[in-house]
Image (cartoon, rainbow over all chains, first blue to last red; front, side, top):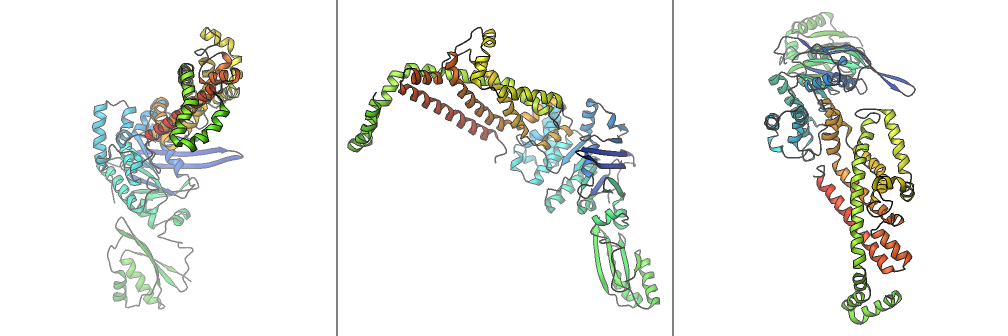
Length: 341
Length: 252
């Protein structure tokens, strides 16, 4: 897991954010009192189903959408109180990439990347030099004179990332940046975002509906549901100790969770929460307690290289043996719960 | 020239003397006749038509592009929404667009006099032509600009662009291929308007065709002028389409 190099200082603070859309015949509450703190150097994930308000939330962060109520502080400055000019300066510090890349289709790759420098009035020679650097960073030096139509989706997103980095931002907002890409390309784009975060110290805020994205690169995650934050915390914590219904629905891993799983026979639920990497738990159990282990179901996935998930094993009939089993598993650092049929 | 003579003789010449014979016959009886006699009439008329078309198109584009941009920028959900202004502008443009050119030409006679110092003539007609065409151009430009992907404009906004920067560096360049196409469509429309110049004693191919066809019953000149108009429209359309395609980098 990535830890921020800098001390944990808040960069983005969202306080009681509300966004209400007026529609014919009433209003739609997109955001209903959001509180969030995103620290400098973090990769912060916001996940939710369609319509949970995640897009609205990230668009409020650079004021592409104006919230109805609440406060957003970026680097201590209230962006909702900014005038047009301050807003433009702020937006150069808070870059954004999009699901549909949003490149200028009539301009070459190099011109696309140069655009933020052009509007900021950077001298041409200096801008061209920076464009070269940025294209090298995203691995597209040889595509400088190509037009976006000639590039693949992944390459287009790389151009968009280079363009977003041109103004030396502090924050990179990613609005479903990998949702239009295939899994392989998603991996490479996520790796690039991680590299940017690590090498340049840029804080990354990303919204997605894909678990894999959160699992792969985020430090912290917030689960958004119905315009509210259902759950927030470190990725490891939120994944294992999912408390909210929204979280349980979202995560395949602690599937159909505790309340709803019913075993046909008395069973034990063994929860893997990141410890005991590569330990032969079952073999150990068989050896030390001398019981036959009957696995009813198992769903374990690696997150940041550590095992997460749960396994349901048949509970031994003998209460003494059962106690022994529970004790052994607990000693191994696993959480065990009895499940009645 | 005797048209019925041509009509009956042509198949006969083709049968008796083959294609070469027909060619000679047609040259002697139709084209050569038309060219020799009408060259002095048609050549200046072509110049006048091109002059009126190009001048009016350019003038109406200067006004039309500005208005088209205003329409798109100030619309609801645009870069700088001003709904009331947008509605007022849209209404005026629709009003002007709904007056047929030939009526506007007459309505504007006094204004034309005040502006150009004359009431009639080839050059003078470019004024009412511009007035009649610019609302059309504005709507055309509006349509082209509306085609620009909203996401790209949003991205430009998110990068901290000013409204002017979005207009100059994003909206217009991204709409360029469509604007070029619209330009050639407007030019052919204005070319069509110029043919009504005869009403205001203007010149050009249209006026020539009407004058010689209607008043003198010299159909050869009328046909020749019409053919030249058709060729002109073809040239404008083909050139516009190919230029638009060439400038469109969304085509691989």
